[in-house]
Image 1 (tube, rainbow, N blue to C red):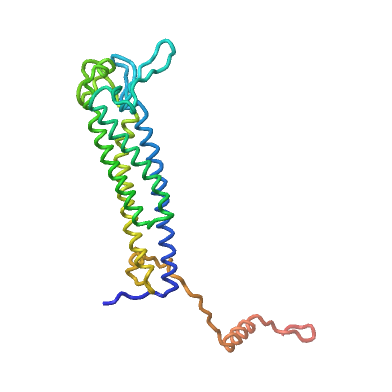
Image 2 (cartoon, rainbow, N blue to C red; image 1 turned 90 degrees about the horizontal axis):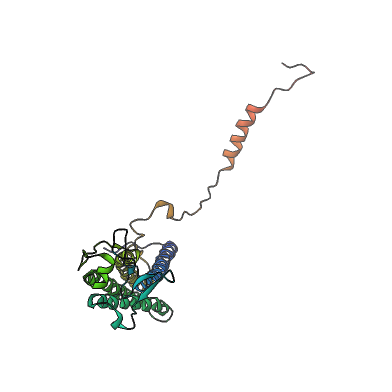
Length: 268
């Protein structure tokens, strides 16, 4: 059975509303992608993954590649380690964490740069490309968060967290905000990837529907079954009232409003 056809004017209204909401969601996805890119870089460069507590043996904090200790002379934290020189990183698990977290940050930078491709390439392909990059970023961040505790068995960690520290044992240290932000970033990257694939699928349908001369009920992308009565355009109608009815109503009211006239100053 053929799907019922909407009026062309009505279909244009629904298509305009759908495209407006589609663009709004796309802009929101782009903004969240940029925000997560910045946060991913912050997670990578900040040495605030684990740190000291009141019960810890030492003072300081550690990141994926750098570890910092307070200097009593300058009253500042002195950090050691660089992601450009893997020899300065403490052990193998920390090196692997640096690699995965750094590549994840690089992939997010590429994703943000790929937003410019919307102006010169097909939007569906750009959404799919960005979604794949964000999905790989989520996998790399997951590996970084899982591998990082395996490096807690180093001697420098013992100095900071005490003898109770070890592989996947934090000892007397505590998790800092950068590690928590990295773990939350896994779910954020997955959400952005799924949203990118969803927008790509919807964009493909829009490209197909706009090539047709007519728009059917099934082609309104969600508005067909969930349309509200308020959104249906109402055509104004002019109703003509017969002249005799108007005269009759006027005479009816005028009879009630008439007052008896007086004759000679006396009222009968």
